[in-house]
Length: 175
Length: 239
Image 1: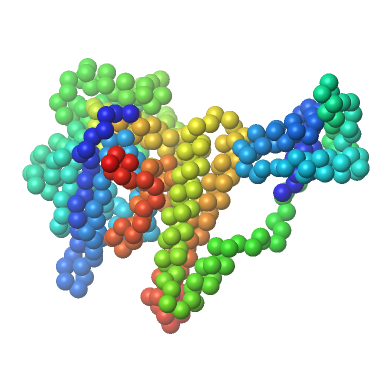
Image 2: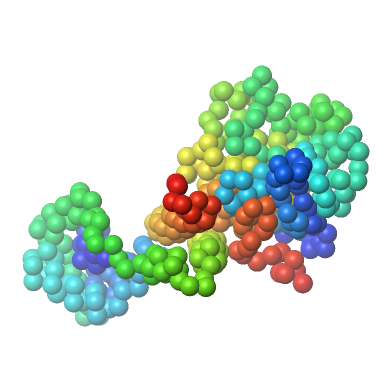
């Protein structure tokens, strides 16, 4: 996840110091991906080294306020203007579990699938409960992202289920 | 929230539905027991042929089980004659369909008041109830529009108003978002959810997990039997 670009985007709205950036990031993303303050300051110093932000004045309490440079603004424009790369798929415990369950001796893979389907549906119900409690657009869109990912997982589980059933009905390999 | 009630609005007890006979018999539902209380929205999910539509059809009194009982507001649909069943359908049960099923020659207001008028409610009172129902769904201003003058989302709102008009408390929704885009579909689910929060009991058949997740409980059907549930049963919350 690009903390770097998230900080650039927030600084483009207004100059801020580290703790403000962390608070703004977490508010905007519904505290879904907590940032520790060390990570924020490390990132800021790298951005400063690369000329993308500059640490300017300190406020009355001695916090150093960072602001975006022209190079930082160009970098941000590039980020918003390009697609997020689909890199090497992250290791997915569920996909690995189902792949192994298919051939595990004495195990019913459809039971593994149904347990997961119920658990993922419960998570999805939780996201919708949170959506009912908020009117904040950014928060809602982050929850939607989690909800669509959970939905994709359930659809994939349905697909696994249907394929297993097909194989059970046609052990000779007919599709 | 309404005062807690001990009697479910809809109760299926050991319901079996077999189509055909002998070697060709198809068990559409196998001893399914299922309850929905006022204030509760229950979603039913399952692959094609799992019995979802059969369950909804039986709950609506449009079909009869081979064995078992179907109770709506305490009345056993399997024990009453077809006339009384039809009356119960008009007064207690509201249907919402994927393709809205509004009557094209009637305005939104007329579509909503029709079930009341068929039940003998005087036109003026029926129109007033329809206009209240449309208002509750945020579309009072569409009362004089015809279906082809409205968007899909607006038509579905009219259909929900028609399903709840006249204090009917059981809403049966069959893929109500199937013809709608994702944002409009979510609006419709939020409305159904709100109708249930206001005291209706809802059963929603859908294949869209995000929409099913608006329900208090999600029931998974497979080969005509309930295999699992996600969420808290209302009965457990009450006891």
